[in-house]
Image 1 (cartoon, rainbow, N blue to C red):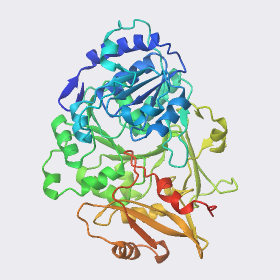
Image 2 (cartoon, rainbow, N blue to C red):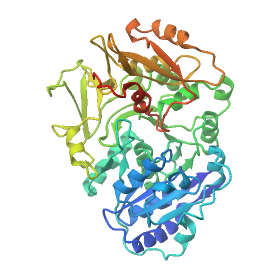
Image 3 (cartoon, one colour):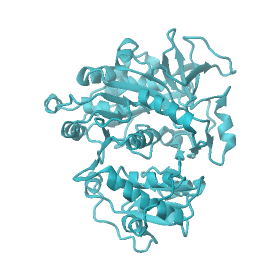
Image 4 (cartoon, rainbow, N blue to C red):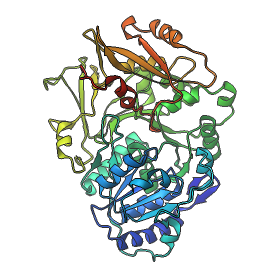
Length: 507
């Protein structure tokens, strides 16, 4: 059963809708290697469309619904999308870049999503050539042909440049079995009538997408939260007796800031397996969540490109504060210095990993970019860190985020992990900006809690009592909102670029 707001639908009904949509997509000419883009919030229609696309043997291309016309247009063109399925309220923001003649299907924005995002009255899209998704699906007879085994083309977030589509060959039975074993470890998901999954992260992002589609394939009960809101999450856990969730550390921080009365109001005893990733989690935050929810908090390290090679449990998190885990079945991790030499435990270098349960990937139409991130069969996403003597991986920062000030390497992630714990700080990002004397100096951008009265001096004092003085940002800015994805990643490039325009970076 799938739940969203006051709506619910069982798997038998969903399978009938999906079979009809497969017929429709087949009539559009979809074949293995074709792509269909989805610009949908977390909705029941997302599962209908994604399952039908894959059933037709094609690739699903989820599009970040925060994107504007030019950004979405790039993905539609680059992926070679054969069709687009889009929520009604989202279509106007990208309509100018939808390729002419591209079959476009409109999903009516359901009430719970409209309320959560305050979308207002349904926009008039009569001037845009499109078909209503639900009506189009019902015009077709259910497909009786064996369902294909399509995949996905997930576009990287673009935090470091133009988004690139990650594609893989279709897995065979051996790979599927290995992937299921890895998913059982990392996500805790397996065919089980008792599993109730709550989805609160955006399914355009690779981890929530893979998590949601695996839960769907296993026929788990799935509860969709239209938009993450801390106390509403607790309410849904109690109401549906939720057992499994995928989260990001920002959600933990906001949950921990709820009043004690609200935190005690809900019965969370049904929780069995909560997994998080996508961004570093300060050890203090992890420990506080384990004290509150119990030893159900798990963490993975990986990416769209690499899959998940590294994972750890609550017990390991308490024993190894700050780790992102150690290799699991199929996982490989190595640390290299700038000259390509493998480093021993304890030495910081660039992290290269791979999950061998997944077939190797390429960037769609960009083999050169794929070659740039590889070394000895492994892949880097630009993270810097080290392995300890027991094989546990620790992150220092992203290579491209590292700041070199006066010849000293500074890792902003360390500063952010402290700053996010300061009362009054909702979100933060620390990065390097030009400095005539030192080459670079630190800048902190902060999104403050509503009603907070913190200022730059208070921020600098808070950090200065916890970290070395050279790690205290010399510039502190307060913004109404940071450019953060719902996945938890901040678009630091957008914050940093204005300072470096017309300059050649030193790092």
